[in-house]
Amino acid sequence: MNEDVMVGGHISRQYDEELDEIRSRVLQMGGLVETQMDKTLDALREDESDHIVDVEKLDRKVNKMEMLIDEECTQILAKRQPAAGDLRLIIATSKSVRDLERIGDEAERVAHMVRNAMDNQISKKAFKGLLSLGEQTKELLHKTLNVYARMETRKAVKLMRKDQEIDDEYSRVVLRLIEYMKKDPDNISDALDVMWAARSLERIGDHCINILENVIYLVEGEDVRHTGIKEIKRQLSNSD
Amino acid sequence: MLDTAKETYQTAGEPFLDEPKMRVRNADVFYADKQAIFDVNIDIGKNEVISMIGPSGCGKSTFLRCLNRMNDTIDICRVTGELFLEDQDIYDRSIDVVELRARVGMVFQKPNPFPKSIYENVAYGARIHGLTDTKVELDELIEKSLHRCGLWNEVKDRLEEPATGLSGGQQQRLCIARAIAVNPEVILMDEPCSALDPIATATVEELIHELSENFTICIVTHSMQQAARVSSRTAYFHLGKLIEVNDTSKVFTNPEHQLTEEYITGRIG
Ligand SMILES: Nc1ncnc2c1ncn2[C@@H]1O[C@H](COP(=O)(O)OP(=O)(O)OP(=O)(O)O)[C@@H](O)[C@H]1O
Ligand SMILES: [Mg+2]
Image (tube, rainbow over all chains, first blue to last red; front, side, top):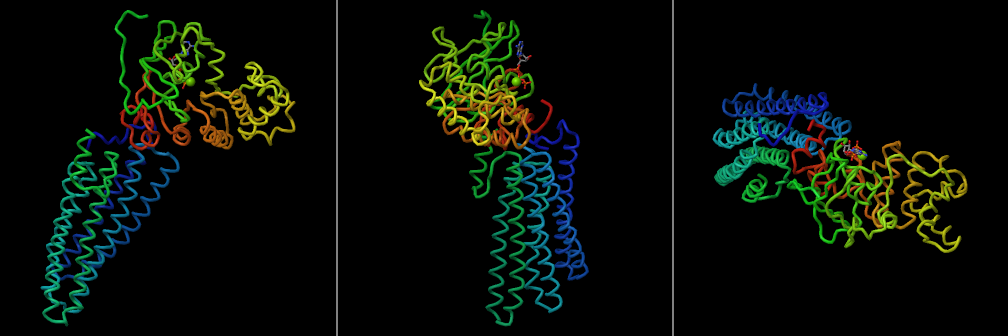
C-alpha cells in the first residue's frame, strides 16, 4: 500500500467501512473481468465453446457489480460529501468500474467472434494469430488490477508503456490479416471478424491505461490523461 | 518583547499574494502567558472570499479578531507581529480603532441586532461615522444597504419595528447590512451561518458571493461545504498554527499538508 493513500482512520468508522467495501468490490469486479478474459482466451486456445457461455454469464454479473458500486459511490457523495483523497477515491473508482465493465464487454465480443469462427470454420490460422495479442492484454489487465489494489503509482507509470507494445502487436495482427485478405477475396469476411476481435483486445488495453491513470489521479491528485509518460514521470517526481 | 528566540512556522501552499488587501507577518497572539497563535504569515487578497477552517480552539476567531483589533477588547490578549491594511500598520499607535473597524467590519456568529428598530440598526454605524448629512441621504443609504442584503422587500414596510422581531436569517442579513452600511473594505465573519437553517444559510452564502464584488471577506466556518462553496481561498489552522493556505479547489481535492487532508476528510489529526 502506498503511504500517500490514507484509507481508514476516519472519525466515523462507518465511513471507513463504506469506503473499504467499495474498494473490495472493485477488486471483486476486477476478478470477474479477469476471469472473463481468461475464459475468452481459453476458448480461443482450445476451440471450446463451453467457455463462451461462462463469459456471457460473467458479463451479467459484471454489469450488476458496476451498478452496485456506482450506487455506493453515489450514496457516499450524497451522505459524506467526501473531500481530498476520499473524493478522489470515489471519482477514480466510479471511472474505473466503467472501464472494467467495458473490458468485460470487449472480452465478450472477442468470445462471440471465437464462437462464430468455430461455427463457420474460419481458418484457424487467421484467428489463432490473436492469441499473443490476447495474452499481452490479459497480462496488462492482471497487472493493472494489482496496481489498483496496492495503489502503486510508480508501477502504474511503468505499465502505461505496455500500451505501446499492445498497439504494435495489434498493428502486426492487422498487417497479417490484410495479407490474408489479399490472398483470396473469399477470406475478407472472416478476416474482418478477426480484425474486430483484435480491435476489441486493443481497446481492453486502452481501458487498462485509463484505470492506471485513475490510480495516479487517486494517489497523487494529478490528472495525467493526455499527458506523455515522460511528463507524467516529471510531475510525479516533483510531487515527492 | 520576548527575549526568547521566536518560534517560526512555515505555512504550506500559497499564503502570499501580489498587492494584498491585508498583510500579516509573524503574528503571535497570547492570552496572558498562553500563546494562541504562532507565527502566522498570510496575505488577504482584494475582493477575495477567504475561509478559515480548523478544529475547535485552533485559533480561527482569535486570528480573525486581530484583523480589526477586536482583541483589544480582551484585557489579557496581546498581539505581536506586523498587520497591515494596504500600507497602513493597523497596530500603529496613531490608528483610530473606531475608524479601523469601519474599514474592517465584523459579523458575528449569533445575529446580534441592537434592541432598536430595523432602521436604527442599519443607521447606527453611519451616524457614528457621520457618513450622511441629511435624513434623505441616510434613508437612501439604509435602503441601499438593505437592498444589497436582499432584505429590503422583506422589511420596507416595518422599518420602525424592533429588529429582534425578525427571523434568525433576517437578523443575520440585517447585521450584514449594518456592517456594509459604513462601506467597509473588509468584512470579517465569524461563523455567520452557524445559527441559521439551510435556507437562510443559502441566502447568506449567496449574499457573501454578491458582496465579494465590492468587499474583501474573511469567513470563519465549521462547515467544510460552506468553505468550499463560498471562498476562493482557504486557510487551515491547527493548534494556533497556519498549516496551509491554497485555492479552495485545491484544498478540497488535493491538499498539500497531511494535517489539512486529515481534517477535511474527517480523520483524527
Ligand atoms: N478570551 C480568552 N481568554 C483566554 N483564552 C482564550 C480566549 N479566547 C480564546 N482563548 C483560547 O485561545 C485558543 C483559540 O481560541 P479561538 O476561540 O480563537 O478558537 P477557534 O478556532 O475560534 O475555536 P472555535 O471553532 O471553537 O470557535 C483556545 O485555546 C482558547 O481557549
Ligand atoms: Mg471561534
